[in-house]
Image (cartoon, rainbow, N blue to C red):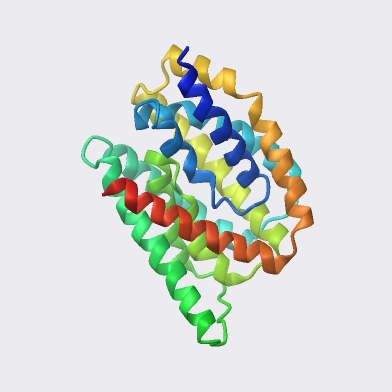
Length: 249
């Protein structure tokens, strides 16, 4: 088990932030854990430690948002995400973490800048519908980027946010999506030897903070109206996009 105090100084806040995000804040901050933990340990070790914790958070989220999901979207994005995870596992030894961060950071940032530009122009906001072609692309990209650095949130937000779903339906759909993605990732992570005893014991030590973060996120979800909820999601998407670009460069 990791016994460096610096690691826990950054790891505990990271787990709480991710829990709040998964508990109902749209997942915008869910990707910050690996970068934060990477201040103290190698990135891929950080990803391995976080994955079991994410799975526990997903189970709590599934219970908290049970019955709230968009079946049409899930039928499109889940199969695509499995393909993305497979591609991530196969390219594990060829792509660096910075390649993936730069790609997803640029996409997230450009998307939110365009959204802000349209708002400034006061142009009518186009509400989209579930789309097989778009959903398959963003679902596959989410699975791919989620595999390496748990950064599947921005691709899903890019696809889902313009649909303007009810906030509880939106969160419930993403909770199911990432639960399937994260539990599927356990298989290639184990196959690649990322779950050694030190990583698993460290995950176990941090698990106590998972439900605290998730339940606080659920509390905040009920207190924020739809307008501010979506503003927060777009804002978080922009911040994480910039963060990924900076880290990649």
